[in-house]
Image 1 (spheres, rainbow, N blue to C red):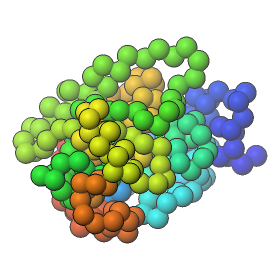
Image 2: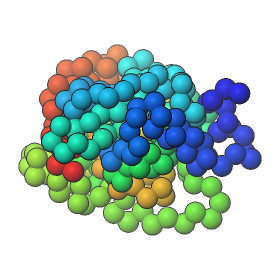
Image 3: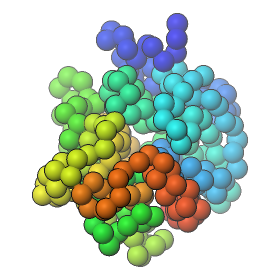
Length: 276
């Protein structure tokens, strides 16, 4: 059976697949329990090198429920890292599934559910996004204070009534502010994608309260809260959103902005994680 297909069977409990993934990761890494987890979006990949020593690294498609990355610039590996300061272990998920890939919300939520089954109590969700504020241009990291789920989907199934008040942990945001008092906060709006938002959609999101727009994170955050994880969200503004800036939107520009800001934001993220 293809390991990435079992999530597609409606008779399968997605948490069972996450458990299978966690068991395999424990066996392959030799780490019985990971304390924290990171999902590294566009521009954030360099943080893994700065957090600690890589104990093991696996191709994502060798782990139940995961697949190869579908987008250029996204990493297709899962790492186990040991932090030198305290000996704690971090599970770094470079393999992120997006709703626009068409594989369904179970795949989108699988990474955070695997992190919870692997023992993590905290997860950091990062992304590259479009910004609605010209004063926070490309290269600016922004803490996510709340989100708007504009995908029309939920990662939860059945009567899973989950309180999303303070979904993005005030405690973890306070830690981030201690590391860098200049960090600002904003509301992130997730659209389904893969097309970029139109200027009218960006204006709508702004009127609803959004400061940032993108195609990930909100669904993962919902699933993470449901799985019992404490969530920190950080966006990297890679471009001004449609109608805000003057340049046409292009994925190459997103990648370029991520490369340019990568060393600086990676150091920031590593410093934050060390304070957990």
